[in-house]
Image (cartoon, rainbow, N blue to C red; front, side):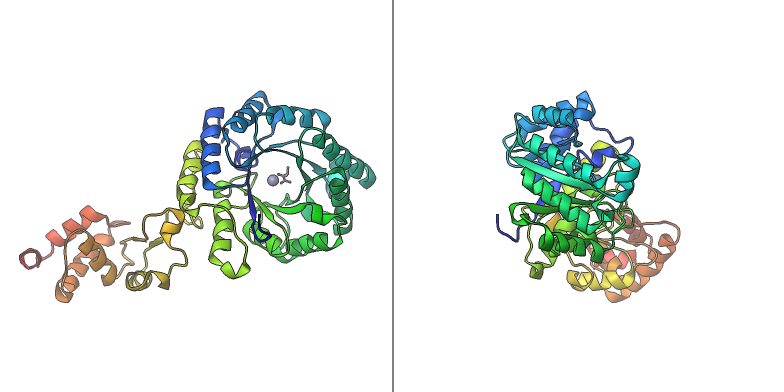
Length: 391
Ligand code: KIV
Ligand code: ZN
């Protein structure tokens, strides 16, 4: 792995599946895991094995079928969680236990009702115990986003001493600003003793719509793994969207950070997750939304028809979308109408286009979107139809 390779840790089947009403059965999870493996993710977080017999069964089944990716199971810093996760992961070619504990003042005082020193000891003990089952142990400092950096560095040091290979720095509540999150990663890179023995991981939630920006700031400042989900699904406002961070890095090559993702599978992957979970993807969702490559205003359509790059920064084929769409509405201009008419078999002269366009506008004012059969009707009912077909 080059130092500029960003590991993609997919948690669609764990953090993503925490969305209320979106529970998947084992068969559905296995299908998604197979596709994630094909997509090229480096780690699949398959579930939280101790949480239910169903989750245990899913992690076990995924461990058996995944060929390339590391398969990971979540635990709390509790011995039984770790033992059960190790059991569920026993068939995985590359197993990882993901264990951790809350480190912010709020978690220590209100959730655990204990002290910083006690949390440090529990963190160390959990990693040490997980290491007795597997080599690859990731430690998460829950609510690291709101944890004081000096204390966070001490917790990270303890986890490294116990053998952690990855340090996950979650912005659990999605509170950090990108500059703050980036500075946190930089601080840990510069101040944690033994940091060269582990990689730092970004796990950002989207409560303020900053998950993608925070993850990108994290890797710019030295993190080498991003935890994310397909379509950004997850608790509350969701997690970092996999398709977004992957495309940000691809479209900004001067950052010199790349991933192993086959981006042409992104659109299909988004559809699979959305269909399996029954979660509709908003049409304006970046990269995979229905309108991500659709142009409807006349000015934009004219530009895109002349040269796609006037209004598109991504070639739709790069993410598995066949082509950009020129959507006909009452806001569309003559260029778009001529383009769509040509696609259904009519080559219109300038004069013919003027005539047909007037007819189009009166149709479009009555209908939200004009489809191919409407175009036929618009042309057939225009006064100059006979000239068009005899041309
Ligand atoms: O958001 C979070 O803190 C988490 C941890 C359990 C990794 O999902
Ligand atoms: Zn999370």
